[in-house]
Length: 120
Length: 106
Image 1 (cartoon, chains in turn cyan, orange):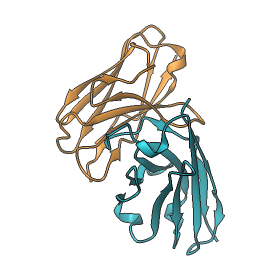
Image 2 (cartoon, rainbow over the protein chains, first blue to last red):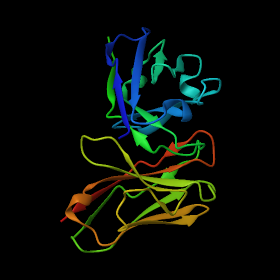
Image 3 (tube, one colour):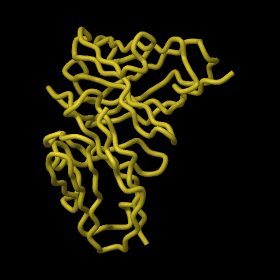
Image 4 (tube, chains in turn orange, blue):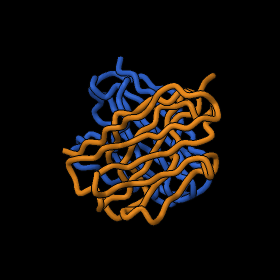
């Protein structure tokens, strides 16, 4: 059974940093592209970033470029999202998601989500 | 960014047929996908590439469309289908989602 378990969320002040982790199990992690998607009541679902199987290719939405870094450790079956210079508009539930095999178009499994609140 | 427009809410009775629409601000070919999100849960994939049923999803769900107009159909609707349904496109960068259609079962 595919499982994606996020951790690392919490309350952080504007301008500070936070690092999310996503532990994967139930599939060969190194064979799949991975992603982070966030959700807020006002903006809905927003794709944040994606990473290729080996980690050599990364993609970001414009609003987080230069502030967020997606990475992965295939030996640990874990992906990460380093979030720097956080803003109030980054407040959201962050989901770890898997891209299907050899496909970047959609997400076939999602984690349960982790809440990030950016506030002073 | 490609904007996906969905009706905010629908209410139907069990056993009925319901169609949920998604209109794209520009053509996305058939690169449209549908998700179901039940209250307090993460989204789950229902349909990919406009009309392909994800493994394990009941055949009551189906998808159609191309270009700018897409439809998710549930026939027949069951009480357990109470959820918000989202479309998502992958033709244009960045990947974008619709605002969701909340389905209420009367």
